[in-house]
Length: 335
Image (cartoon, rainbow, N blue to C red):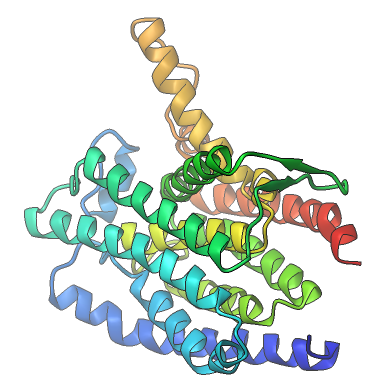
């Protein structure tokens, strides 16, 4: 474990460097995406005013994915030499999901419509990545088949096969929940920034320096990406970015061996996903009636008259509050 001063210095360097690199990449990437006509196709069943965003460059998530890869390779090398490969595993896991998202985005751009990979193929690829990640983390000693319960010192032991099934379900669910949250300018990045800050603090406190590098790189990259994605967005992250981001969040939760913390830090993702599920189920059961004016939840508030900036501000604030609560809930585990 490094000293507190060195850890803080490393966090500042990684976050700052990631911010600057992503900012620079954005200036290069966005014009390139425009030239390639990699424009976002907007769903017709969404808010009508979102149609004005048709053609906004997508796959902008590449800017922070590349940055995080550079930072993990450059600053994480010394940690790898010491046998700490957690950041590489989490980045690799997130990258697999990012590639799945890239394929999906590419198919949408080529066909000029809002459909890419089929749901079946997405699920199969994501499930395979989740199982592989779980086995790898278990083999490397990052995971135990015991669920840590925040705010307590209780661990719930599970048979390894049961834990495997649980982990795969949570990973796939988390990644897709983050993807669902990406529906308003600046929303998914703003909600995830407090989550990245949470994992930066926790991994630094625990002495998992290699994961601190990854978390801080994610934090800096998202802060810079938000410069281009805040309303009115100049670029969208696409499934490339949102699936990578989801993989990063749940990868960090499992690499720190506390997946249940996702209930708190991922409260906005969960609310968004539940609103979608509730809407569909209720619609089918009542033959056409709706609970929400539109799902997922951010669209409901838009239909209630909230401006996009207000939706982002409120959702990000809720995320930040629950990340603070989560930190208080796990702080006793490390001290």
